[in-house]
Length: 144
Image 1 (cartoon, rainbow, N blue to C red):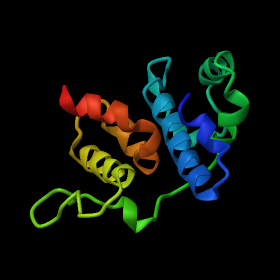
Image 2: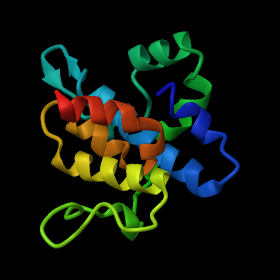
Image 3: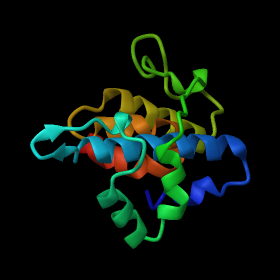
């Protein structure tokens, strides 16, 4: 979250929306992975307010006032440029001649996200729209 909060203050609304999507989904992931109350599973999507424990953690990090509103959002990603499940597969290339390095890194990272598995996959899927902020984490995970 510490890398996403600055993106929420971006001058470009597209970056703000993408960071908002990531924050929204990460909040739900955190709650869903810590959702046992008296041995009953409580879905985060059914709760109208953020769990107190999560609010406390975010407050301790000084980001609750920025992230808490995203508990109530319903962002969806519809940008076709983010749907690159086949990037790097047969017939498609992640790199094209003349492509800028930053763009190549974004495409490659998105490709790695589609290939990721394990416990971090939901986190990476949440961050697929803001790869500029998460690329190093995805690359390290994919190489392990």
